[in-house]
Length: 353
Image (cartoon, rainbow, N blue to C red; front, side):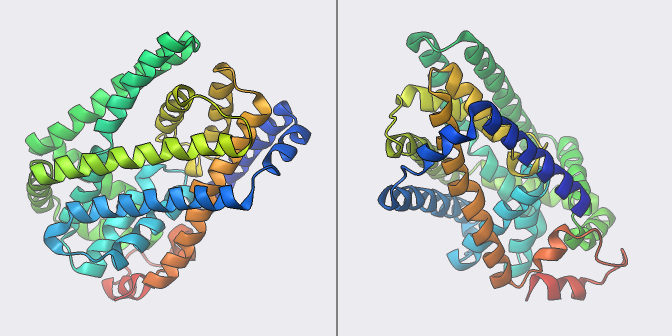
């Protein structure tokens, strides 16, 4: 996994360098230097509030297990770290945080796995709404029609995800397939190999428990209402962060443009191609902003500042959080941790008691 991660990082950095070359690095640096400490601290506060709200949403889903924020927050940061250092997109970080919280709080893995899926499901409703608004804004604001077509594809993708989520609740066979995929993902992360071996032995029983957990979480009106409400606030903060970045650079853009570009790029980031969508996010953001009429140097400057806030800083905090939880960061990405029959007690020493 280390080799894959390094190669993926190099590809991502190569894309960023290429975009910087096309935009002209000498035009970007002066724009970034305009960012004042006051604006940076404001942007950092916005990002931290959005992360805390995301943690509260997950805690809401797990409320029957009474998980404290002191375990939820660091686990979320470790999930961000894994997403950002492995070329598996959300498929990497979500199983990791499900396994960590299961181990730390003695929660059935089926329930913790269901909770992270429901957590992602609650992101769909705000994205549906924002996608509809974005498509409307494209036609009303004179933004190129190509973006509207892409947003239409996004809406179709979200519809498919919504259908999959509902099917998970209603169809046991489909749940079984999802669990098998979940186990396969876990088996590719060295530190979690023991979980995959243990889960394969009891897959049918796990499927029943997982299906029950999904029904309990997704059919809970309290979770659906407040979870969706929190997700909407988080999305609002993401849009606000990007809007404020441009303000900080002295190049204000319309909120219409921010909504359209953020929705388009966010969906691209779900693709498990490069660690943390490194390079993909930067290239797509600049392309969409330029199509919307934003100066390319300002588009690149704003994108780089944005990435420091929600990629670099959360990753650093993720490393600190892993140490706090007693998790070996190196083993999260190491090629292997020894014999495949590693005992559960050894995993306990890695994750912590």
